[in-house]
Amino acid sequence: MNKIVIAGAGTFGTSVAERLAWNLDNRVFLHTIEKEVASDIQKNHKNTKYFPTRFINQSIQATTSYDVFSDADVIMLVIPSKAIVSFSLEMKKHTQRDPLVINLAKGMSDDGAFITEKIPFSRTASMKGPSFAIETLNGFPTAFTFGGKRDDYDYFKSKVLPSTGFSLDYSRDVRAVELASILKNMYAIAIGLVSGRYNSPNVDFLVYTKAVNEMRGLLHMFECDEETIFRYCGIGDLGLTSLNDLSRNRTFGMLIGKGFSYDEKSGATVIEGKRTIRLIGEIVAKNKREEEFPLVMSLYKLMYESSSLNDYITAALS
Image (cartoon, rainbow, N blue to C red; front, side, top):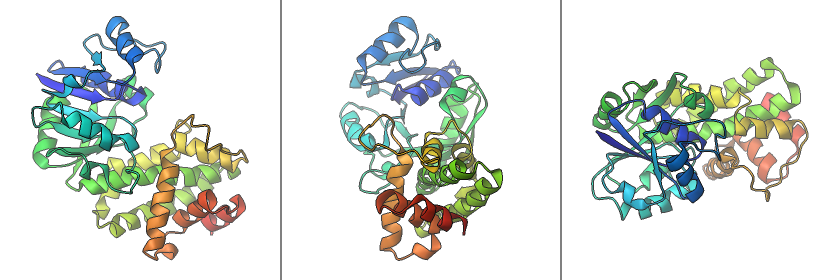
């Protein structure tokens, strides 16, 4: 049996747990800091907070105790990116084996570092792809890119994934997989902004094409494998996130494009792409590469330098 512990019992963590439980060789546990969520899953086989009308697989167990990590074979991190490093340091204290730790969160740490490089385990990987939580929970075929060591990819694909309906492609460049998933949130905002203004597929794909080229350029700038843009974590995840209204980042951009304001202090929803705009914009400016990345810089000026929406639209479409 494979003991799989998923850290994070929100919408996506619960959905992944449901699918992995389809493989009868997996024992699946959800770790959460929310006591009421753990109790609901244990007693009622439901996660009412995030999926009010749905039952989940009765074999899934939930806990708030860090002891669940002690003998895990695989740990999957599905918590906010800014919390992963501190969470992993605490988790490490309770881990007795050498588990495969897979980061599913999409974002950078606050200092702009790649999260997998700060996770204090020897076997780390990244898994990203076009995957909305509700469709994952509903059992639709879903694909990811696995970034990591080949042996870990072979083990995960052959032992953990059978019967789950998950598909994988592979990259040995973990940084590239991480970076692609980070950038797509930012560019989803970029495309959402023009969608809100024009509601035009012509305009969407004009900016989408620019976004693909800038993503490839940023992969090169970070000395990552540029071919990763053609994996599920690249154009696949960018397409899903930037052209579908279920995406928070696209919706965020659309609302601004339609003239609504965003209250930074409300804290109702985490918009990973907005953090990414700041981080990447500062890195591009520091490296004096502004002319190569006009979408990045126009987004940065709109979000952090009080540039107008019209200035952004002019730059994005020129």
